[in-house]
Image (tube, rainbow, N blue to C red; front, side, top):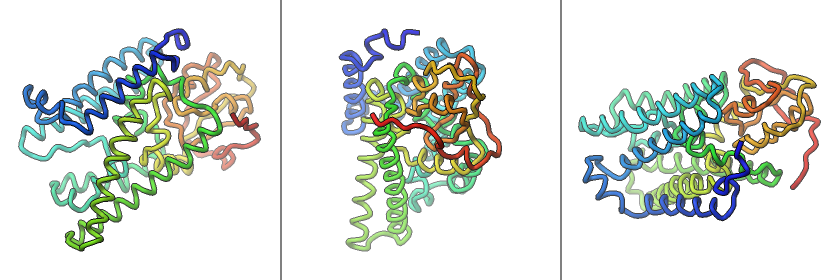
Amino acid sequence: MTTYREAWRTRGALGWLVSFGLMSFYLALYFTEWLTPLSERIGLHDKWFLYSVVYSVAMVGGGIYFLRRHGNSRYQRLRTYVNIGVQVLLGFCVPFAMKLAGSKDYYFQYFWPLKIDYLFPGTLRSLPVYLVLYAMLGSLIAVPVITYFYGKRWYCSWVCGCGALANTFGDPWRHLSDKSTKAWRFENASIYTVLGVAIATTVLVGANQFLGGGHGTFTLVANEVQHYYFVVVGSILAGVVGTGLYPVLGTRVWCRYFCPMAAMLGLIQKLGRFRITVKKDMCISCGNCSTYCEMGIDVRSYAQSNQSFTRASCVGCGVCAHVCPRGVLKLENQPRLSGDKKRQSLRIVDF
């Protein structure tokens, strides 16, 4: 493995340079129109379809890189194929075909609260009935039910475009995720704050649109909240910071610290059937599981303590189980004792 031997993967000067390039790209994408002329010239409607092409290419290249390292695992092969397939089909081909057919483009792999506007009354009124049903039933019923039985991994590691980019293009930097207690505390404070803001924004903007707008100060406030949510959360945190800092803070910056979808699914996961089981007295403390956990979970501490566990932040990528030389870890979906749902008898070291 060359994890700590390549300068661009070790948070060194070259890594910071790559990070600066990524952040600059996202700043230009979100806050300028420099891609628009090129998009129109090649028949891609607007800059977002061109970005989808770039996104897909990055995922294919990253997927090849990932499979060269972890492709001997059937689970990782299937997961990567699905990641790329969902992005190419649902993240580009289907929306592009809808646009060509003269209808509004729709991204079927996203749900509320990741796409909070999908439940806005104004958005729902603009959609055909089948998409209204898809958006509402998917976000409010299907997603929570599936997550209860299978954990958040079905979405965060198999379907979501943000997670898919992290799994493929971002894989070279997965080992850079912060494992400290301070990072865990910040994660808990930030991700649930963003979830609360997402819910509040949905209610406020939804109420204003439902009432038809035109209510003076209330409408002004609702419009301002919506605007700043999309700028701060949808652009800066999701793109500029969430992807731009891959080479510095690891691959799941957005998913771990800011994604409202990940926060909601994590709460359901804690109540559900997903867990990582540990074979007793098998851990040799090599640390591979913790090193390659993109969510910054100290998996080794659980393995050393012979404790199966469920963590709200775990996206079920399965890499911890894959890199374990003794097969100590296993991802499961089954009922468990309440003791598996929380951290017990583990020594916490504050960094």
